Image (tube, rainbow, N blue to C red; front, side):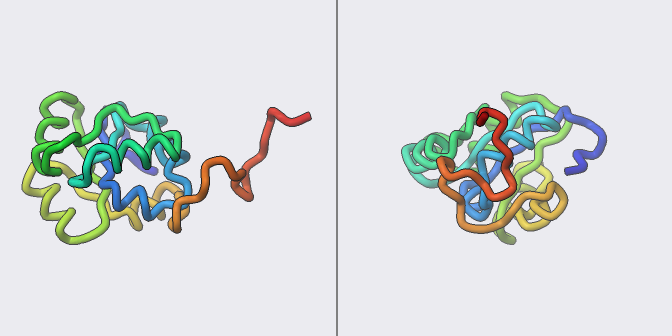
Length: 138
Protein backbone atom coordinates (compact mmCIF):
# COMPACT_ATOMS: atom_id res chain seq x y z
CA UNK A 1 0.00 0.00 0.00
CA UNK A 2 1.23 3.48 -0.76
CA UNK A 3 1.45 5.31 2.53
CA UNK A 4 2.06 8.66 0.89
CA UNK A 5 5.84 8.35 1.31
CA UNK A 6 5.86 8.47 5.10
CA UNK A 7 5.72 5.63 7.59
CA UNK A 8 4.97 8.16 10.34
CA UNK A 9 1.36 6.99 10.44
CA UNK A 10 -1.12 5.59 12.93
CA UNK A 11 -3.54 3.13 11.35
CA UNK A 12 -6.81 2.20 13.06
CA UNK A 13 -9.11 -0.53 11.79
CA UNK A 14 -12.76 -0.72 12.65
CA UNK A 15 -13.45 -4.27 13.82
CA UNK A 16 -15.95 -4.71 10.98
CA UNK A 17 -13.21 -3.83 8.47
CA UNK A 18 -10.93 -6.53 9.89
CA UNK A 19 -13.81 -9.00 9.76
CA UNK A 20 -14.08 -8.28 6.02
CA UNK A 21 -10.50 -9.44 5.40
CA UNK A 22 -9.58 -13.06 4.71
CA UNK A 23 -6.23 -12.86 6.54
CA UNK A 24 -6.41 -10.10 9.16
CA UNK A 25 -3.20 -11.29 10.81
CA UNK A 26 -1.29 -10.80 7.56
CA UNK A 27 -2.87 -7.40 7.10
CA UNK A 28 -1.43 -6.30 10.45
CA UNK A 29 1.97 -7.81 9.61
CA UNK A 30 1.95 -5.95 6.31
CA UNK A 31 0.75 -2.69 7.84
CA UNK A 32 3.55 -2.77 10.40
CA UNK A 33 6.03 -2.39 7.53
CA UNK A 34 4.71 1.06 6.62
CA UNK A 35 3.04 2.37 9.76
CA UNK A 36 4.29 3.34 13.17
CA UNK A 37 1.22 2.15 15.12
CA UNK A 38 -1.75 -0.07 14.30
CA UNK A 39 -4.80 -1.02 16.29
CA UNK A 40 -8.50 -1.78 16.38
CA UNK A 41 -11.44 0.37 17.41
CA UNK A 42 -14.96 -0.82 17.99
CA UNK A 43 -18.04 -0.12 20.03
CA UNK A 44 -18.25 -3.84 20.74
CA UNK A 45 -17.35 -4.92 24.27
CA UNK A 46 -13.60 -5.21 24.86
CA UNK A 47 -13.77 -9.01 25.08
CA UNK A 48 -15.16 -9.21 21.52
CA UNK A 49 -12.18 -7.29 20.11
CA UNK A 50 -9.75 -9.20 22.33
CA UNK A 51 -11.16 -12.57 21.25
CA UNK A 52 -10.91 -11.65 17.57
CA UNK A 53 -7.36 -10.32 17.82
CA UNK A 54 -6.17 -13.29 19.88
CA UNK A 55 -7.77 -15.80 17.55
CA UNK A 56 -6.08 -14.14 14.58
CA UNK A 57 -2.78 -13.52 16.36
CA UNK A 58 -2.98 -9.76 15.92
CA UNK A 59 -0.71 -7.69 18.11
CA UNK A 60 -2.20 -4.24 18.31
CA UNK A 61 -0.63 -1.10 19.70
CA UNK A 62 -3.98 0.19 20.94
CA UNK A 63 -7.62 -0.79 21.19
CA UNK A 64 -10.79 1.07 21.96
CA UNK A 65 -11.71 -0.32 25.32
CA UNK A 66 -15.11 0.46 26.81
CA UNK A 67 -15.72 3.77 25.03
CA UNK A 68 -17.14 5.09 21.79
CA UNK A 69 -15.19 4.87 18.56
CA UNK A 70 -15.02 8.67 18.37
CA UNK A 71 -13.54 8.91 21.85
CA UNK A 72 -11.14 6.08 21.06
CA UNK A 73 -9.91 7.76 17.87
CA UNK A 74 -9.52 11.09 19.65
CA UNK A 75 -7.51 9.43 22.45
CA UNK A 76 -5.32 7.52 20.00
CA UNK A 77 -4.61 10.68 18.02
CA UNK A 78 -3.55 12.46 21.21
CA UNK A 79 -1.45 9.54 22.42
CA UNK A 80 0.24 8.72 19.10
CA UNK A 81 1.45 11.96 17.54
CA UNK A 82 2.26 10.74 14.06
CA UNK A 83 2.04 12.84 10.89
CA UNK A 84 -0.98 10.91 9.66
CA UNK A 85 -3.90 9.14 11.30
CA UNK A 86 -5.83 6.82 8.99
CA UNK A 87 -9.05 5.01 9.89
CA UNK A 88 -10.03 1.94 7.83
CA UNK A 89 -13.75 1.33 7.87
CA UNK A 90 -16.61 -0.10 5.86
CA UNK A 91 -19.29 2.52 5.24
CA UNK A 92 -20.34 6.18 5.05
CA UNK A 93 -20.89 6.33 8.80
CA UNK A 94 -17.23 5.36 9.31
CA UNK A 95 -16.13 8.03 6.83
CA UNK A 96 -18.18 10.65 8.67
CA UNK A 97 -16.72 9.52 11.99
CA UNK A 98 -13.17 9.82 10.67
CA UNK A 99 -13.83 13.31 9.36
CA UNK A 100 -15.44 14.41 12.61
CA UNK A 101 -12.36 13.48 14.66
CA UNK A 102 -9.75 14.68 12.16
CA UNK A 103 -8.66 11.32 10.76
CA UNK A 104 -8.19 10.37 7.12
CA UNK A 105 -10.66 7.70 5.99
CA UNK A 106 -9.97 4.68 3.82
CA UNK A 107 -12.62 2.14 2.90
CA UNK A 108 -11.51 -1.44 3.53
CA UNK A 109 -12.19 -2.40 -0.09
CA UNK A 110 -9.96 0.43 -1.35
CA UNK A 111 -7.29 -0.44 1.22
CA UNK A 112 -7.42 -4.10 0.21
CA UNK A 113 -7.08 -3.24 -3.48
CA UNK A 114 -4.15 -0.89 -2.84
CA UNK A 115 -2.30 -3.25 -0.49
CA UNK A 116 -3.18 -6.53 -2.24
CA UNK A 117 -5.10 -7.82 0.79
CA UNK A 118 -7.74 -10.49 0.26
CA UNK A 119 -11.32 -9.71 1.16
CA UNK A 120 -13.52 -12.47 2.51
CA UNK A 121 -14.50 -14.31 5.64
CA UNK A 122 -11.51 -14.38 8.04
CA UNK A 123 -9.64 -17.65 7.60
CA UNK A 124 -8.72 -19.87 10.51
CA UNK A 125 -5.17 -18.77 11.38
CA UNK A 126 -4.16 -22.38 12.05
CA UNK A 127 -4.88 -23.34 8.45
CA UNK A 128 -2.11 -22.54 5.99
CA UNK A 129 -3.09 -20.14 3.25
CA UNK A 130 -2.99 -21.52 -0.30
CA UNK A 131 -0.19 -19.18 -1.42
CA UNK A 132 1.84 -19.47 1.77
CA UNK A 133 5.19 -21.21 1.61
CA UNK A 134 6.51 -22.67 4.82
CA UNK A 135 10.23 -22.41 5.41
CA UNK A 136 10.09 -24.44 8.62
CA UNK A 137 9.36 -27.70 6.81
CA UNK A 138 12.11 -30.04 5.64
